[in-house]
Length: 220
Ligand SMILES: [Zn+2]
Image (cartoon, rainbow, N blue to C red; front, side, top):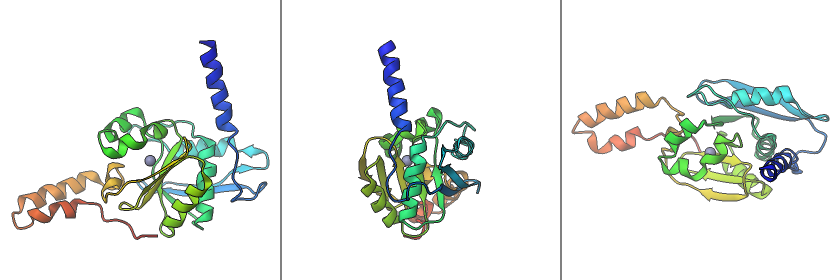
């Protein structure tokens, strides 16, 4: 039991002491600007300065990343903020759109029924993963993230978003145009209603699946 506790403590300090890459010069304040896709809420400002991470900013970021399905939050791994800020700096993106941050086990269980959820579920539950979108240079962002070699990078070209996490370094690509819908990004209820109406019309039925799919955002 003691050994396990020591192991956990060592793991936690290793997590906090994750080294920072060179994309942003040392000593420069680190900032992030994000907007939530579901309610337009924003996080903007420095989260780290010469004295280290700003606990108030980290708390605000954790709240910003909360799971709105169950209104619950968890501490976010600060290394995730560093990773994201470096990727956004490399892609010259002043702001990113948050599609999915923290996921409660309940929310994740719903997503885990799909291929999408199975691939990456644990890191969102732990506050160590983010799915985001930027309007331009999304491919540059993917390449920058891969070059950093500091965690998981998932690229969803059909749905135009990137998954980043601070777990083991790995990379995957998952095709599919409707994956954003699985994150609850758009009004699912309305889309399902539109789909039901479409299916009732014999002349349109064959095209209903395409109509129901999320239209991908412009490529970057
Ligand atoms: Zn993800």
